[in-house]
Image (cartoon, rainbow, N blue to C red; front, side, top):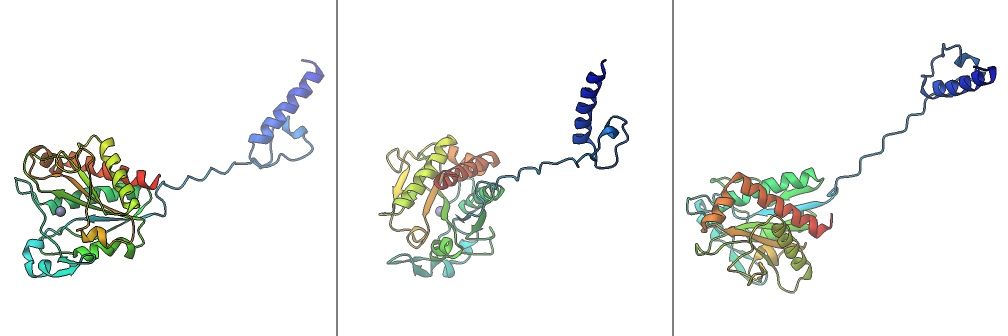
Amino acid sequence: MTRWALRVLAGVLGVVVGVYAAPAPVQSPIASTRTEPAPPAQVEPAPADPPPPLDGITIALDPGHQLGNHNFPAQTQHLVPAGGFKKPCNTTGTESRSGVPEATVNWRIVRLAQARLEALGATVRLTRSSNRADRWGPCVDVRGRFGGHVGARLTVSVHADGAPPADHGFHVIARPHDTVSLRLAKALRAGFDEHHLARSNYVGGGSALSIRSDLASLNLSTVPVAMLEIGNMANRADARRMTSRTGQARYAAAVVAGIRGFLRR
Ligand SMILES: [Zn+2]
């Protein structure tokens, strides 16, 4: 190797050692030919993780009814404001033919949806904090106002229907003259469609959409709101899905997909 080639090689190695060496004194005879000490290695800071998609968003979920409502007839039959008229505080909800209460189905699906939404960064608030036979309520007026009270971007109320046994499939209820409520209802429908959950064959003429003005939970909300009837508990196939772990996970995923679709996140 020529003297010139050795000098080039020494220069290259010097740079390499300078880049990779720790700032401690370098012992290599090649590197020691440098007149300036090698600069400390520059460590690029790791890029910050992007915030999760629902970061900073509060979502209100309403698992319809309380398990113990039937044990408190006086409290639940008490009339409350419902949006220009009065209604009983809360009803008992329906049940499957095998006796699984609607309150429990709604509760499990909402809890699963809550966990998924929280994993995506959302803050989730529920209208009830338990599913217990020794508790009742809250009343429908409290449920309706809940989303506004907790600063939610939207409220989704989750129910399961009780209809003749041949009826099946989900539908979503929006309130009249409210394009935002309707957009939320359609986003939830898209989430259910995406998860291959069949649309109602008895409400909405194939649209799975219903507009109702008789529901306090919708009437009294000051934030975008829609109510899901996820299926018919009296229908054998719907009830099997609604009461199974895998089925409940699928409904929860569909609810989350709908909410994300509405929020475009
Ligand atoms: Zn219900």
